[in-house]
Length: 102
Figure 1: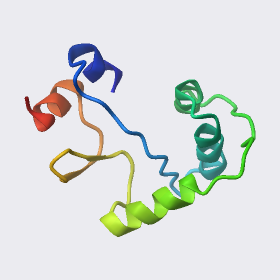
Figure 2 (figure 1 turned 135 degrees about the horizontal axis):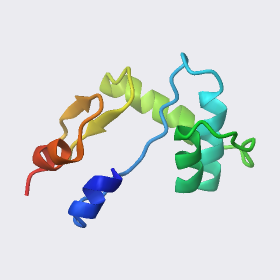
Figure 3 (figure 1 turned 60 degrees about the horizontal axis):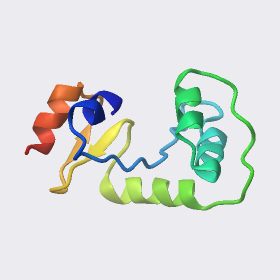
């Protein structure tokens, strides 16, 4: 995402926390990130750093899980493009830019 944003300031990402059950502690980490609305905590999670416990009660993560089920998303990462296409899996920055188009 960061590489895409460096190249294209007109592309925005809306991140939905989608913790997979196969990752221990992912649900609590997702809630902590959602409570704090913190990109730093998101970066820390990807760096496998210890995250604080969630500091709020939120249904955001549960709502995201329901949305993913409704859309047929079963893995992460998954991208939903402006035209509604759902693209599973990781994509390099240039490939993402090409998918979004001009």
